[in-house]
Image 1: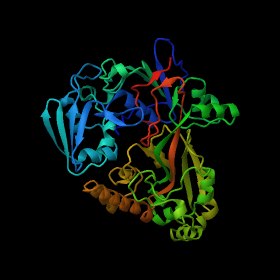
Image 2: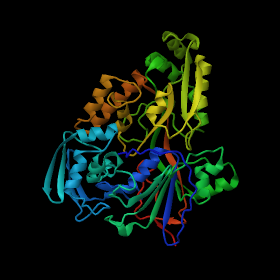
Image 3: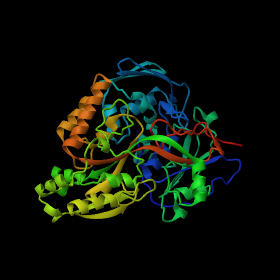
Image 4: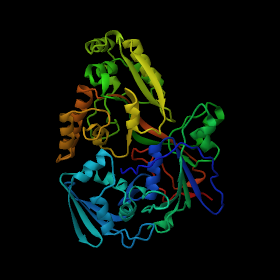
Length: 499
């Protein structure tokens, strides 16, 4: 969950995957900076738990843990005699320092840490974390609560993550980072070093450009510059390319939902205008563009999350009502679209469905609104993107089946869209103190109704239930598609070349 925020410039580096036959090099490529950061974080830092190659949560820095019956306490049993990459012990003091001074900027993790009631140190290797209320997804969170070198952070401040100063708790250490390339070497101090068979790990962020196949994710894999492409890339429409892709494609589930983020400053502060835009979208056209492969949804919480009463899909409700849309547009003061020009921003990256033109066409045809489309780079941060326009095609992709992950980004204290509703905030906070999972899910559902049905704070579009990966399993053993609803998370432990 913790995102180590680093700055990257856009630079495509052509590299040799293996300059020394005695060094095992593995190259993973993706299309955006978020995945770039996360792949690096999972290699450099480890949590109390980690994922195995199939996505199961297994012991890591903690050799075991026990969660009490009402999910209000977790007791951790630490491994003895393990260290950071600089030889400093990962002991009770280092663990507690991470809990007391979390390096995090996201709303969800902040809520978790704010819910900690107390710590109990039971002995040199055992401690208990007590929470103010039940934490129903605490085990799912453990691999993302990275144990960071707080002694280095305290010494070097914001420069602690630079290669010359970086200290690791995970299987790799950072050798260099230039532009869109991160190079890591196996950490000799890692507690499970004997099961790390990759000597050098390279993480690349490649802007997937279907118009220029020389600079595309597929080309990087096809030519051997990348061993694993973690995002479904654009596949050139040739028989040989498709056959090659089919041979090496692995499918895994993903918790990923697309929506239109709305800048609540300016004209779209009027809920009637936001509702008009939502009602004017012809979902038939949207479904056609998506080839019927992705469910058109009413809510932002993915349909794949179990135990949650979802708002439903396009098939269960009439989401297209251009007559009512035009009435609401007139009530908002823009009858016939007069005097209203909107800017729609869409991401120019691999794996992003080409839906911007379809949305703009619906608003032009049904509401006579002028819509300007701007293509943006994935290297712009979300806040920068939304502040430069009115509408943004965005997506949330998380790794934990918790509806609050998909809702908490709109809490007044955290959201960047200008949305604020005290009742919505209160429901999210009440959910944090729910005594049962059923109550937790019900409060989340009420919050989602306010967010979308009442306030139309965003426009839900569709879910992506699966994600394609490209990897040559004839060359690599120990890699499996993660089955926990994540497109990016995998372990590097156990992956080895097939001789």
